[in-house]
Structures are given as structure tokens and as C-alpha cells.
Length: 73
Image (cartoon, rainbow, N blue to C red; front, side, top):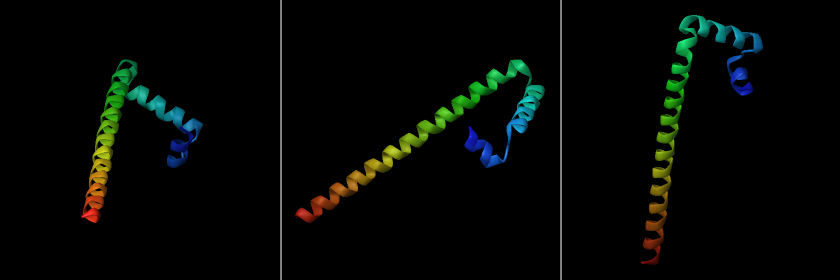
């Protein structure tokens, strides 16, 4: 989390203020729902990233296999 705070230039007090503002805007009952939605979105993003990564690796393996087959002919 410290890398995120350094990226945005936020210190401890700023994070507390941001969290307090979020609490005021959405209320205590809506925050768990928001966090579930955020977690679901992050999970979907990671699944899509992993799928794309595996497809790229599979394509690279196929290209390497074709190169080896063409050299042996």
C-alpha cells in the first residue's frame, strides 16, 4: 500500500481524510457493497489478463513449433 500512497503523493492523514469522505458520501451500509463490486471487477480483470497471457504464450509456442518443423524439412 505504501507504493500506492507514494504514487499519488498521499500520506497517512490524507488517506484518513479520503476514507472519511467516502464514509460520509456513501454511508456505512453501502461501503461493503462497493467493496464487493470493486473486488469482483478486479477479479474479472485478472481473469481476463490471465486468459490473454495464456493465449499469447500458446501462440508463441505454436510459432516456435512451426519454425522447428520448417527447419527440419
